[in-house]
Length: 195
Image (cartoon, rainbow, N blue to C red; front, side):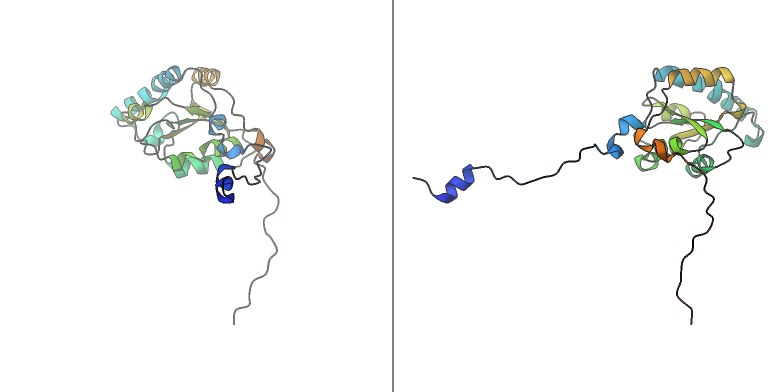
């Protein structure tokens, strides 16, 4: 005959738990980054249409302000560009991200897919293959692994080829939250009196 303690040890103890009916959308990072069909082709297109031209302009010592296209690599400037709200001008941009390279700080990249999705700028988010950061840094300084190209002065053939290779970004849980400007400028509140 065994004791009650021995019986308790043999019977698995269970507790009541609650599981979410819907999965947490914030952890589905593979769905947030759009699929790129042929990453090597995209990298070759970027090098041919942008990076080689940048190298040529740098060799000619042309000031960056005089380049025939815009190129933004600073993290804060990229965010500022994506936050712009100018509905009268439908802007488009290509955002190349080296999210698979180890030298790129992941903290910087976490909000990039969400920001590009809710931006009023029509942004095509393009993942570059592993090792592309070193390749791009041969041509330009890319400290955060992010390269934004406003589409205003880019070759339309280049734009079309990139759009053919990159799937449309879909974030279904964020669709109703697309950025819209608000008419509210001030909120009524109270503050303590200064004596």
